[in-house]
Length: 126
Image 1 (cartoon, rainbow, N blue to C red):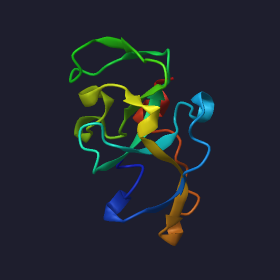
Image 2 (image 1 turned 90 degrees about the vertical axis):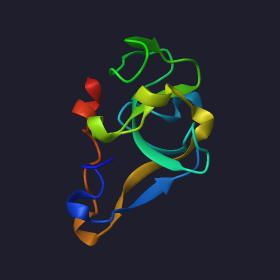
Image 3 (image 1 turned 180 degrees about the horizontal axis):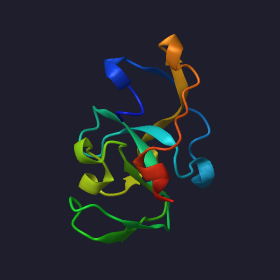
Image 4 (image 1 turned 90 degrees about the horizontal axis):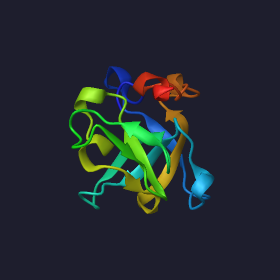
């Protein structure tokens, strides 16, 4: 999620909300979430939500389709660094059941507390 997290090679520590995430309306476009990788459940990924159930997404060249409709209870997630991110353009929409938390804010280092986490990936593609 560089440049949103860990700019200038600093190690950001974030506050993650882990409750109230099971409802369909728990997420909105632009949220940053932590989830288990669909390809390796031992690995945790942090990405930005760009699509919710029912949305039609224009995919990048890495995904086999040009557009896709997000299925029920799924999310389309992408990293802020488009060219160095393994995300939904590689593995498709993810199930909301894989989500373990929503990033609320940066709490360390002190000079990054209160950092604005919105924006990224072209300000959530409108």
